[in-house]
Length: 173
Image (cartoon, rainbow, N blue to C red; front, side, top):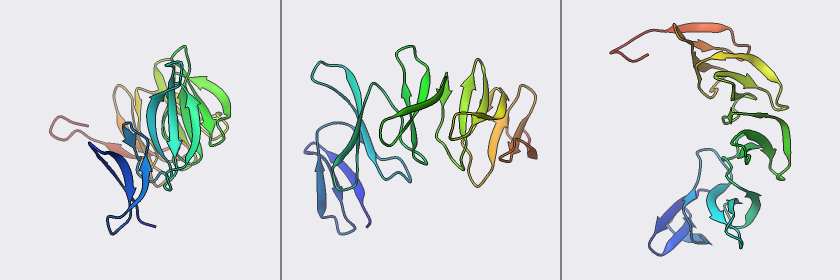
């Protein structure tokens, strides 16, 4: 069913296509990522420690993770560890795979990851599917991503093979 997130001085709520409230949400700054079944917000537990709360479209809390975490994409989010690195987490809150300096949203089975100072792509198990050689890497969309080296920006397929070169236009790659 169609839903929209509405926030105001009276709090946050989910409404249907007719504007009727279908769920009232606890106070906080809610975020509903495009394509996600879950909303999220940063909060604090009783001791004041940061947590990330995930709620479904009925207003039911589905998961609370300690610390700061990203939105879910293809069943995976990333949690920020105390040392600043990130690790993948599933919809049950179970961490898995190696840690990376950064983990982007998983799209088309791959997530951009930062290893040292270079981006590559990891699969759902955290295995490097595309070697980290890029200075910048976008999320995949329709089996394509945009990546940049010092000299070149390009569109790559899910194997990391260049399918098109991105040229300069108006001083922007």
